[in-house]
Picture (cartoon, rainbow, N blue to C red):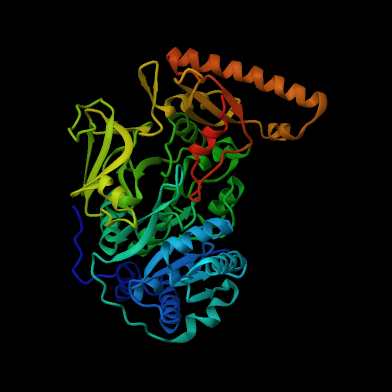
Length: 534
C-alpha cells in the first residue's frame, strides 16, 4: 500500500494546487476566529509568500525558518517555501534567545518568516551570532495576520512550481531535546505523501467533510500532518488558532466550530477529563480523537471514554518516519495499546542484534517504509546508528501480542533495571494516575548512594489549589511539607498495593508543572535532576 510518487514531485502541488485542479478551489480550507479562507485564497497566499522569498534571493534547497503562530500565514509561508524548491524548517516562535541562536547557527537558514511580536528575539539572536562569527539570515520577512489579505492574496501573481525531485528535502523535523540538543531529521517530499496515503487516508479516512482541530501547534510534525496537510489532501478544513491551548480554549472552539477530528496529546487529554465542567461540554461533533507525541496511560483512556464517549485512537510515529506507523483504527480500538501496523509499513520487535523476538517479549522497535528520512543533519554517526539500510532502529521499546497489537513500554534510555528486573516507567505512572489526588505523574530512574537504580516520581496534584503551596511561609510551609510527606507515603502504599513491590517510587516530589522540551513534551532529563543529589 506504499505510495511512490512520480520522480518530479512537489508536495505544495500534492497538498494544495491539486485541489484547485480538482475543482475544489472555492471550498473552505482554513477557519480562524476572524477569517475563512478557500483553497484558492491559500494558493494565492502561497504564491505571494514564495514570490517574496524569490525576490529576496532565496534559492532552491536553502532553508527557510517559519516561526509563526498558527494561522493562514503559516500555511502560506510553508507552501510558498516549498513551491520555490526551498526547505521548510519549523520552529516554536516562543523560543528563548539562546535556543534561537542554536537553531540559527545549526540550520544556516537563508530567510525567516515571523511576526512583529516574536521578531525582536530572533533579531537579537541574529545580531549576537554576527557579533561572534558568520550570520546566515539574508531576509527576515514580517507577517501581519491583520492585513495579509490586502498585501498578499490579491497580488495576482502566479508562481511557477519548482521541479523538485521526490527525494529532495522538503521539511526538517526535530528529534531529541530531552537529553541533548535537538537534531534535524531531513524528510523528503515523497515521505509526506506516503504517510498521507497510508495513514491519513488508509487508516483515519480523512475526507472532504472533515474539520480538524489540534492541541499541538503546527511547528510540531504531528500537527503539521494531522491539522494541515492531511485535511488539505482530502479537501477538508483546518481550524487554526494562535493562543496557547487550555481545556477551556479547546472546549469553546469545539463547540463553536464543530470539528470532526480532534488532534490531541495525553497531557491535554488529562486536563480535559479533569476539568470540572467536562461532562457538561459538547463534543458531539467529533467522530474521533487521536493521541500521539507521548505515551497514553490506559487510565487516561478509560477516563476519556467514560467522560466523553468519543473514540480515542492512540498511535506512535517518529520524525524519522515522519508520522504515525502504529495506530488503533476507527471501530477497532484496544485501550492500552498502540494498535496495529499501518498498512505500507513493516514494524518488528527485535533484540540488540536485530533478531526478531517472539510475541509478548519486550524489545527494540524497528520500522521500514517509504517515509524513511534521509538522515540527521550534521550527525553522521547518529545517522549510521539509527538508519540501517531500509530500517529505522528506534530508541523505543515495545512488545507485540499474538493479535498484532503493539504496546509501548518506554524509551530504551528511560527503561529501568530495578532489582535485576525491567521496569517500564509508564506502568508506575499509570498506577499513580489511578489515585484521585494525582493529575499527572512522571517516573524516572535515580541512582542511590549504593550505585543502584531506583524508581522515583514527580507528581502534579489533582487539586489546583495545591499549586499555591510553594509560596506559603512560616507555619503554613511546615504544614504543606507535612501534607506532602503524608501524600508521598499514601501514594507509595497505593503503588505497592497494585504492582510488584520493587516497582514503587522510592521518592516522590510534588511540582506545579513539569519541565518541557521545545516541542512541549515532558523533559525527563530535567525531571531527573529534581532528585540530584538523592
